Length: 323
Image (tube, rainbow, N blue to C red; front, side, top):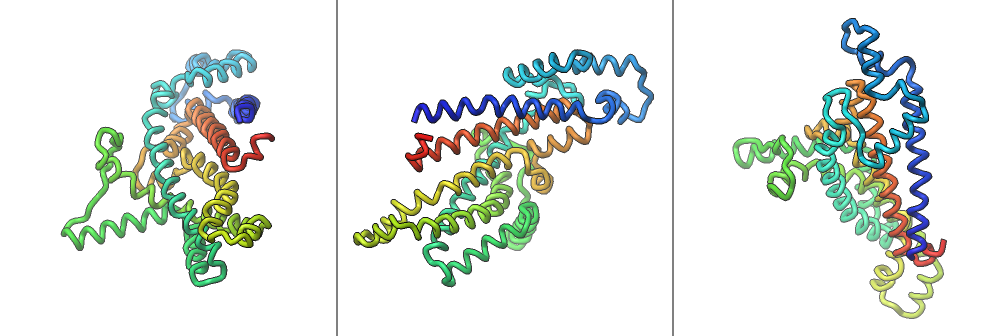
């Protein structure tokens, strides 16, 4: 098991440097000069001296090898430099939003798991029955409708319900408060987007859980267990469920990593200042330093999420530990 984990950790190194190389040189492939493009957005005349100051600040006058080494070193030491937009350290700007995005991703993932695994299992056990049709309809509806539209429907439903019940509509808090400071205010703000996102992504996981469970239930070892007279509940919980979780864990891991930076529209609907909104703001403000730093943060999240998924693989299937 320890050798397996060490191998997976070593695989992170080439992945990290490969992603750093791609992100670094894609930024340099932008037509024109980054500083000229950035400063031209002000609509004012910019002299060459101002452009050179910008280039010196970003280190663009150095060789590409030196720039790349400084870029990688900055990532390893979490020193991304200063934002071209706000002038504040990028670590500070990301830190303000990272906590919110992480909590939403965790809450939405938990909701997705609590919905998907039981429904997918029940659907597979009751294949081609009315229960299976209902679960499949629920999952198809979740796949077909975007999460931000669920968010709009949830907000409208809450407003109408509270208006009729209490005489005035209830509006979630607008400013983010950490959960350890004020749990009630925190959950009041984040539970609605977590429900909308969690249901949307549970639909994909439910479909995968159903397919994996159906495949496992047709295996020879399940027939052998039934021939031995084992209870159906033991066969499902102890044998079939564990063996069908491998592809489901993969989907959950990918979704969690995506939720950390891909909820741009949903954050706009619920007025959340997360990493997705910061992505949009940095691009709209031509803050290329912030943009490449955010991309690398998402890369790091994906890399470590895949590491956790690989470790869960080994725990679920002991044969994988020897790969």
